[in-house]
Amino acid sequence: MFLCRVLNKVIIFSAPSGSGKTTVVNHLLKTIPELGFSISATTRKPRENELNGREYHFLELEDFESKIERNEFLEHEEVYSGIFYGTLNSEIERLWKEGKTVVFDVDVVGGLNIKKKFGSQALSVFLRPPSIDILMERLRKRSTEVEHQLQMRIEKAQFELQFEKQYDMVLINDKLEDTLQKAEEIVRNFIAS
Ligand code: ADP
Ligand code: 5GP
Image (tube, rainbow, N blue to C red; front, top):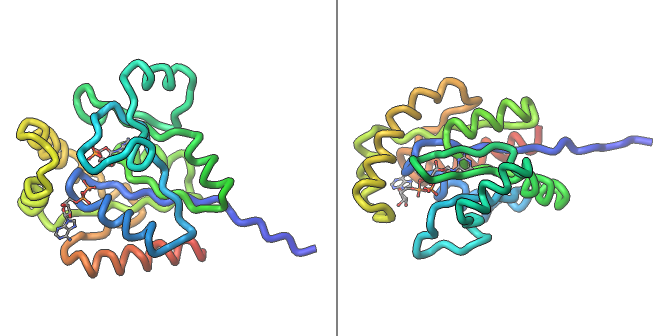
């Protein structure tokens, strides 16, 4: 009998905050039905347009810490001072059970940790803004952070940009239309591989 066992796959999108991960990942989820989004847990407060259980599982710090103790995270990190984010093992199990390729939108260090765990099962994509000035401009225009949070994100961005060489692919997010098209191509090729 010919047994066709599809390898469970994951795709990681990482980049400094404001580089366009959410924009790209949302587009891919709309256009490629084989994909499923890994909903992370975080201790940050929801933004106006965010819903608990859709963008994130928004947790109090004590709940987040209990999950760490129970080994419920594949990886977790204090991405910004006092603000924690983590990938839940249960998300990956849920999506693989549904036959989906899992998509992660995680920070640069988290992305590398996930790649290390999954090896060739994973494709890691670093989304790079055309310049740090453009990144700052996009973050300011998004208007989701107050000034001190914005400064934290920009400072961290300078550090994160050093990691792109450790990713399988780098995608420069200049003209959005081109980025979305290239991202779709990369993901479809990986799913078919
Ligand atoms: P991230 O999820 O990486 O923090 P977002 O997807 O929220 O980034 O993008 C940051 C802001 O930049 C958003 O307001 C988004 O609409 C905008 N943006 C994303 N890509 C582009 C692009 N190529 N050109 C101009 N603006 C963009
Ligand atoms: P934001 O607060 O803008 O939604 O996300 C801030 C940063 O945290 C982004 O770089 C985002 O990709 C990252 N992030 C979101 N979820 C996770 C996660 O589960 N693990 C890690 N390491 N980073 C995450």
